[in-house]
Length: 94
Image 1 (cartoon, rainbow, N blue to C red):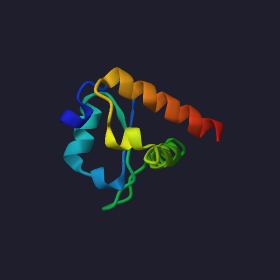
Image 2 (spheres, helix red, strand yellow):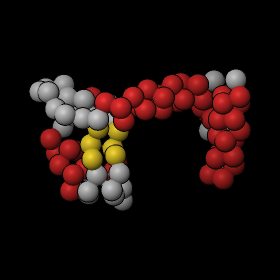
Image 3 (cartoon, rainbow, N blue to C red):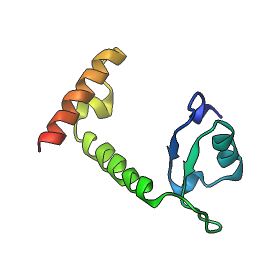
């Protein structure tokens, strides 16, 4: 699956929307551990790791206030990453 291609030996932390048997099997085939709360039937997952999902979602919500990141004005990936780092510093210092 292109979404997780090349990822090995780590946690894959995604929303309930990715609760699909084929996706979970692809994660396990790559040697990763899925952290996906189930919609259909109860499944064990690491709740402490899943709490980090909230931090990631909040960060994405905060960087949307930086117009340059949201609109992707930068021409190169290096310039975009630089501005993303500056935005992250502003968020962290707040």
